[in-house]
Image (cartoon, rainbow, N blue to C red; front, side):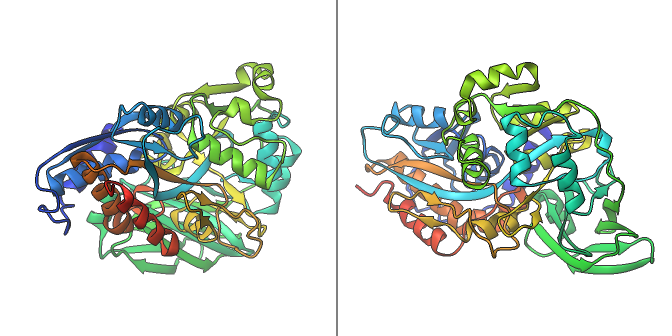
Length: 455
């Protein structure tokens, strides 16, 4: 993460926005802990906010997970809590507080399977249920093979991007059609602005489609492709992906499932997807061993083929370091350069419309656009979006828990989340691997942020 932190600091230096230094008279400290899903986003946002305001907003690294965020907030150990899941009655603080949804993102089904030689897994809801429920135990299981036959098996043979901070996701929304999404970290976006993203047909030796890099950190190109040809994705003239359809050779290898062992909102959202989209026997809470059909005894029965890890970073590190593994984690942990170079990848997941979609910010935003918000500020997802062809169906929205009582620190917390929603996330979320909130949900979230420090 050291490389990432250097990029964050560099970005923050240039991130002083129109936020008024006079909004709050004196510099204040404000601290939070909790969900690790937004860890990469908040690592950047706190540095930028502090540079702009001279305040000192911090978020524990690692955050400890959503359950810890709720517990710390309830015990009044922090000025704000971080969670990706609802606060239960038992977890609720005695003082008055409010949810503030502030950014979303895709939960990747992350895997490392070197035998695929860069091919992207395509997985249906039923197959994901089988893998994480423990009924699919080998990589050459017919369910995985059938999913791979359903979607052309495009593979990326380039092990390391030629442009630091740039990576690509390839999905096929229709036969002979490719949707190529390039994401640039803040540093890569800054160095590449005004240059070109290009899809190049190596077989025909011609450019298929291109776009100029502007202010957004995610650029998508959709074009007709030939499964007999091979293609290169270029950013500023540098190769960031080399794609071709190759024969699928799934190995006779045991699957190792990696799950969150701590109380996790990422787990909560993943289990919600499983219950709503694949198998109603799944439960929905922050503990994987309580979500899975059969509970903790079932997990224990799988022995070493199920591995628990605390926090998104540790889950992602275990997968990146271990061939034959699969788990779930926020997508920015998968695309981080050091892990990606080791062979960790994110699967394309079939949505309710029957399309296999990659975990991009645009695809997460497409799914979130079908959601609604209740009066508490919790966002409720619609998993039955049968006509939404572009939606990636495993997402989370992360929340800040803020105190409504008047205080100097609470004023900073209110300002911080308002600034994220109105200024920082729209400009930077995609480059960091997240999806900014938009439309009615964003407007409602801004109103929730203003309830902090209102009484």
